[in-house]
Length: 530
Image (tube, rainbow, N blue to C red; front, side):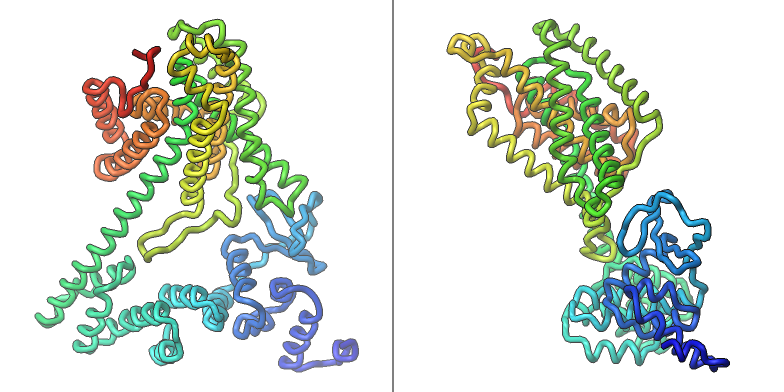
C-alpha cells in the first residue's frame, strides 16, 4: 500500500484504484463514501458492496443535510441542528471542530445515489425491500429504460412486487404513442390508487387528439382511480378520527375517575396532562445528555415517570386544595382553576414560554404505506395501542382489585362505605392520584404528536369534559364510546366544514344530547346516586 502511494505520477485510473483501496482498509460503508473523492464516490454508488440498510442510511443523512466531516477525515452526524455526534459511535461532541464541513453531492452524484439505492434494494432477498426499489423507480420514471424494467419484471418472483412492476410498465406504455398499447396500459392502471397515476391520466385526458375509444378508456380509468383514491382518503380520515379519539380518551379517563368519585370539577386536569408531557421532555433530554446510546428507548422510562410525577402532584392538590372544599363544587372549580394558572406559570418560569420539542424515537418514525394514497403513521398506531393497554389495565384495576372495589363502593354510596370500615379519605386521595397519573400518560402520548408548551392542557380540557359528560359520570365504557363518537365525528366534520364550524356543530349536538339524556350514555347506579 505504501509503495503504491508514493508512485510519482499515477494515471487517472491508477488514482481511482488508489482511492478505493485506501478507503477500503478502515471504516464502514458510509465512512468510506465520505473519505472518497468524486470518482471514488461515483464508483461506490454504481457498485454498492454494502447492505441496502447502510445505503438507506446514507441517503437519509444526505437528504437531511446531516452528514459532516473534518479535514482529518472524521465523520459526524448533526441532529436537531445543534447536536453533533461522532459517526458511527454516536457519541456527543461537546467541542465542535473548527474545520467541520457538510458532505454535499452535485447533481450527477445525486442521480447516481438514487439509482444506486434502487440497485441495492433490487438485490435484496426481502420482497419489501424490492418493493421499495420499485417505488423509487416510479418516482424517476422519466429516466427509465423499458428494457431494463422488462428485465426486472421477468426476473421477479414475488406477486406483489410483480404487480407493482406491471403498474410501472403500464405508466411507461401510456407515453408510448401507440393507441392499442395505451388502451391496454389503461386497463392495467384501472386497479391503481396512486395519485401519480391519476396525474398521468388527467394530463393525457387534456389532449384533444385522441380517438373516441381512447377517450372512453381514459375517462373510465380516471373514474376508477379517483374512486379508489377517495376510498383510501376516507379510510385515512377514519383512522385519524380513531387516533384523535384515543388521545381524547387518555385525557378523559383520569377525569372520569376523579369527577365520578369526588364530584370535583378539576380545572387543573389539563395542566396535569402538560406536566406529563414536560416529564417526557425532561427524560428525553437526560437520555440525550447522559445515555445517548439508549436515546431510542427513553419512552420506557418516560411512561412510568410521567404517571408518577402527575400522580404525586395530583395527590398534593387533593390533600391541600380540594379536601377542605368537598361538597362545594363552585369553590373547587375556582380553586382548581387557580391551581391551573399557578402550574402554567411555574412551567413558564422553569422551561420558558416557548414550546419545547420532543423528538419521535426512530422506531416510531415513518408510516405504514397500505396504498400509495394511504399512510398510517407509526406514532399514531402506537398511541392507539398504548390507549388500549392503559384502558385494559384500568378496567382490571377497578374490577378485579381491592382498591377498585373500594373506589366503586365509595362512588356508589360513600356513607355506607364508611360504615363498613373503608377509609374514604384515603380512597379519595389515591383515586385522585390515579386520575392525575392517567392525565400524565396522556401528556406522554401527546408529546409524540406535537410540540409541548405551557398551554398544552388547555387544548384538551374542554373536550375531555365533553367525553365524561356524554359518556356518563364515572363510567369508563361510556367514556370510550363518547371519545370514539366525538373523535371520529369531529374529524369527519372538519374535512367538509372546517375546524371552527365543525366544533360549533359538535357542541350543539352535545347540548341536544344532554338535554335528551342528562345522565349520559351510561347512568351511574347506587343508592347514593338515587
